[in-house]
Amino acid sequence: MWNNDVFREGYLEKDMKISSLITENINPTLDEIQKFAKGGVDDEDGGLDLSAVALSAMSASLTSHFQPGEKVEVTEGELKNVQGTVDSVSSDMIMIRPHADDLKGNILKFPPTQLRKLFKEGDHVKVVNGKYKDETGLIIKIEDSVVTIVTDLNVKDIQVFSKDLQMAANVASGTGTIGQFETHDFVQLE
Image (cartoon, rainbow, N blue to C red):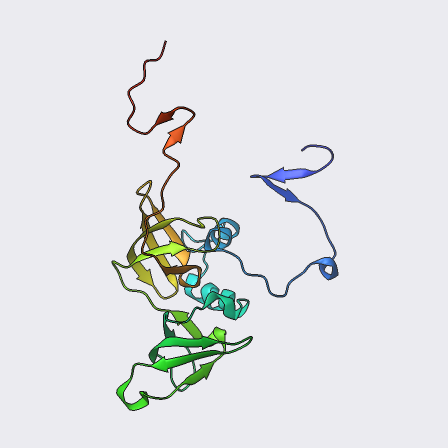
């Protein structure tokens, strides 16, 4: 309790009218979803099916999550499981070139809600959105749209949505210097 406000685990609890809340175009990160899912009954994620949450989070995403040249997979409709490469992105549609032999040469249009970025274990990626933004690392596990990465700098496992990743060629680098000292300098403390 502080200043007549109630805080729990760092979050302000407040009664509000539902009409005053913004509920459209919300794009929570996996970390935020897991934080608010705690306290559930069924499992360690609070009983939430994270793959279902990932799909609903994708519905709030914009086409800006997709870049030409990225590999994607269709997640619903008649062409479910068809893989392709993003050819171009318009304001509300993603155009892809499918990899399937019977569809080669065509350009197919999909809304971003029907596509998921496609990665494989061992890919080197960069997080472009959320709590772990700008972290780089190797993919070690993929479950639907939830990807587990071991980071380059601090070698810890993190989980993010595939929509928040892009392929990376460079390794994130720390600052390496503090004042006049650099990493691996010998110093004497008094």
